[in-house]
Length: 305
Length: 305
Image (cartoon, rainbow over all chains, first blue to last red):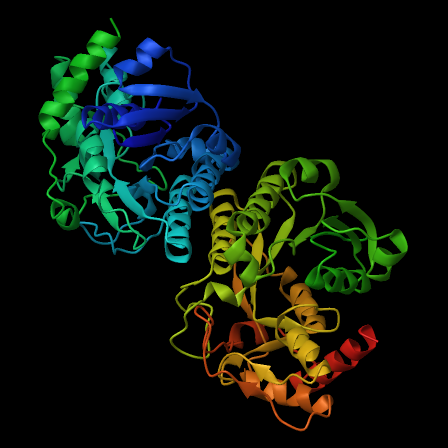
């Protein structure tokens, strides 16, 4: 019999790529979450079933069944949103996680839970690269809520033997992502604007969404009541300036990016993942950031024709 | 004009004593939470208004007004319950806290929030006495959820300048408490049973509920966006055996308490608060544990006539 996976938030950026990955790996994929798409559209991402619903215990009881795995991609995806709507951010990230864990405890105890968390849980970082055991000092409600979701995973794992694995994703990007640095930069470059906030020296660790999806697959067999945590990055720190240079160049603009020199409060200075634990799983990223950014710009130009 | 306080969970053990304390201190006291009591009964504890409702954002919008202070006594009160009903424990402790903080952010930003948390957030303790800066390793869902509620307080304080103060209460007891060690011990002693689990050497730090309520009052003026945390104990470590000796003796039983010698998993070996930060507020406990336990036994005998 085919293995089954339920992907929450399957209509989202990571969710749909996770669906595609697991379908290609031979799973029957069910999706649940917000979003409206027809069966032809969701089938393109490998989904067999789609349920448009909030991720609540009621909805899971109704739709989840007993999958081999739940990949919990639902949740807030924006630091800025968490500053204007902290209660909604809490609901999307924390309440949905509580519902998933309780569902598994009560109704499907053999189901593994894979949780894509965020490097935002590290918050203010004192030392690079960041290890999984590095201290957690999240600065935004977004990061705090991701940390709380992780704590619920650990609590259900240790108290109720739910099998869980957590990945702290760094900067996931790729065609289809309509927010964050690359999207903003392409939008600006399109109209010849090369002015950016920050210093340009901020380090980010980029991971293509195709690689992010394959990492979800790689950790799946490691979910356990020990609740292991893995960093999800490339291991390479790239400055914002390097990335913007690529984009500005791809748009054939004469001047390079100009920076305000001012950091936004809460913006981390540097993010770079220590990937030793993750690499030890046998997984590694396949898409270099330069070719990934180049592909992104091509997609952006096409999408905005 | 009289100052106003909203006490969530005012029908509970700590909640009703908090209501009594703030009424005596000149506040107009409104209560909200679970529980059914008539106006004569709740007036006895100093409440002017009582609203029987879940602590949700909707309920707060309807009933809370703009009090000078919210003392958030609502929440789960049982480690054992959290092991059998973790999702309900989460709802009572975490969701209610999120609602209170969001209510204050949106509708009453001048309101201070006082949160009675629990020493259960310390969990497995390596060194006594326990300081507020000691590491947090909660072992039960109950303790994890209290820690999460604290994190939400800190997040709203730092991101949205909500004024908060947290007290981590140790073993609150007093007449009216119908659970935990003293209640169980009196119930057993009443029928001549002197067999207890554990080793008897477990340390606890007892705080009479009258003193707990006065401590809520003492920290009230220290609530701030710095979100200070204070231990709420006596500072004295008392063994379970010492307490049970008192009770068994009060019942005139010939033999002292007998212990199984086996600890329950998750039971902390020792809890004793470092009270330096709290004492510096000018507060101190007034009821010695021996006289407090003696009063408790008298109440128990009367209540069970």
